[in-house]
Amino acid sequence: MNIQVNGKELEVGAATLAVLLEELGYQDAVVATALNQAFVCATDRQVTKLKSGDAVEILVPRQGG
Image (cartoon, rainbow, N blue to C red; front, side):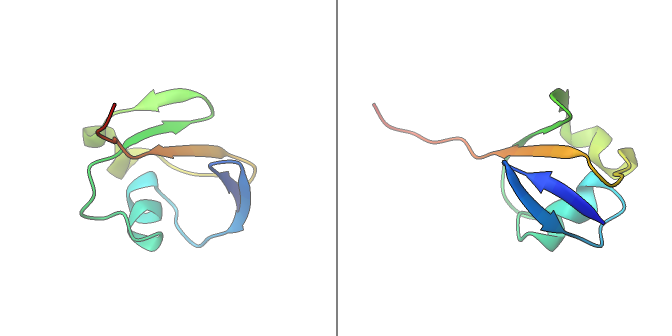
């Protein structure tokens, strides 16, 4: 299915947000996620289903100043 991840169109096989994170190599990373501009907490990612046309944002925290 086609979805947008951080503004880029991608073809993915993931059915849930958790599987998408694994597919993209974020399985062990501490990240914040949003689906269609709504925050999704880590505990809900396993049950958050994806559909074609969805927009996912994956944010990685940074340190610095």
